[in-house]
Image (cartoon, rainbow, N blue to C red; front, side):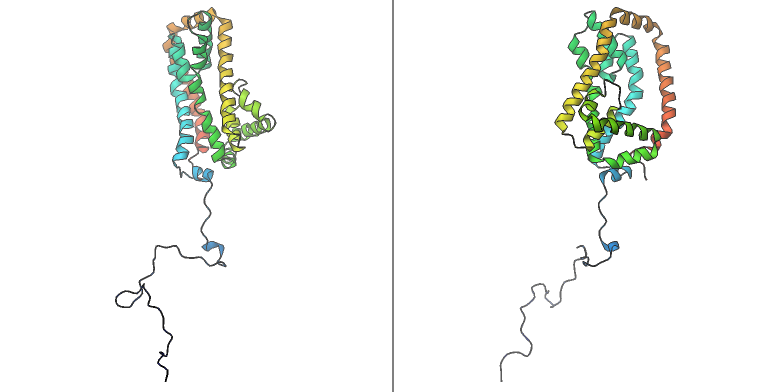
Length: 273
């Protein structure tokens, strides 16, 4: 008779415990989905960054991109009265540095002509504040792209016209659109966003944008330079009424804010759709 056992021998299972029982399965591991399983059992596709932004699921990149743009919108209403007060009290370069207002740049050009300010100070003082949010529009185009454009067009008719116009111009003159939009008072934010969406190299965008901002500042400074002393005299005459002028500016900003409020709430990036 053979000495082999009736059942084939098996190697001992190292996973058995001391009592010879197998450990319980790992419930934390994801269950395998059969290849022929229905689509409802498959893992949902990750949301596009633009969809996450619109649903309020912001990450640190979203705060770095959208945060400065929102802060600049708030500073427009806060900084305008402050810059106006500075202009009326002959602190023109400081006003240019904190607000980059056209009036401050024009008066600084007049001061360049009278020898009170160096030309390079008048040109460079407004550059940081006027340039700081442009890269945010560019990276917003790269990250959010068409998703955010479609949302803005759905929520605000003015964006539909603005984007349509910007896309027509950008399709034909992408380089010139980025370069000359500040000087020609075109919708620069739309062009910067489209530059990011179309993957224009960042070094190319930032070079064109910086030159464009300098051209715009130089345009205002040149106007003030040719006006000369009359621009300074005009500001000096208004300084006695600075309080009433500031109150008028604040009232005008409140009216504009009240008119734009409902539309901006509908188009707010963090709104739930």
